[in-house]
Length: 67
Image (cartoon, rainbow, N blue to C red; front, side, top):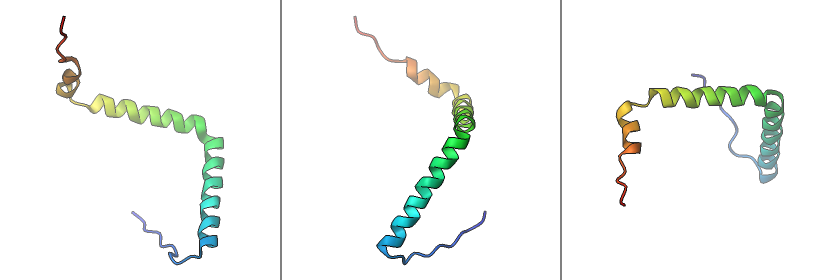
């Protein structure tokens, strides 16, 4: 894993500019890759559900129903 060092002693104006830049970058990336990102997130969600032990899934259906 790489570590990126950044300056942490910015003025409030500098910090705001960095935040605005990051927001614009995120927006541009989402505009360009939103479909692919959504597909990848769905695949990850399904993968996590598939890895969930059956015992945990059984807990969803053990509620008592009172009549």
